[in-house]
Image (tube, rainbow, N blue to C red):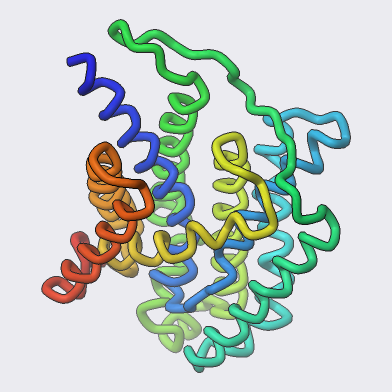
Length: 282
């Protein structure tokens, strides 16, 4: 029992991290079919929003509010300037977002330098759970990720924006006839995906080294979570995160973490070979 509790909590923590970093990808790639190779940089933008806010005397909670706003504004500006012109050409989307990724990395490094940034998390202590001390911040991360996921599901299932987006994805021509502006919906959807990625960056910052290249570590894993869960399905993100997160945690107890990650990604490729629509297709 003593070994099971930390294992379960570690698995839930990793699942929550994957859930947070993949929700934005699920919107931009899974729903909009845009291969966004700059997704990791929006995570980095969120983390550096925390750096800036704390540098100006603010706290973690202020950054948690500011980061998705910053991500949304930057995402909206980039969608209007670049992404809106390449929806019909997936190859152009790959090249443009890859170039954008490199530019954002260099801009962040020029402004903040190459050294890891110093930030402070909101909960420094631990909480005793059935005799096992577990970091309080990780427990907060699990709860916050679940709440954010539930809120995202509600937005896409119950709001006019979610209905318009799903209608535009199924048939932009028919949606236009019904009064939906596809250009406006696409812009808001891309910006929302960027906002969720930036929010994930703030939550990740207390757990990892905050550098200009931190987002690269989550790009491939976000793609695999969305693909394994089911591209085009927000609910599939939870399934993909659960599968990949639990397997990676279990393997990390026996082999080095990097090897565990490689094996899990290889397994994900096998799953996609036999079930290309994912676990929970749209």
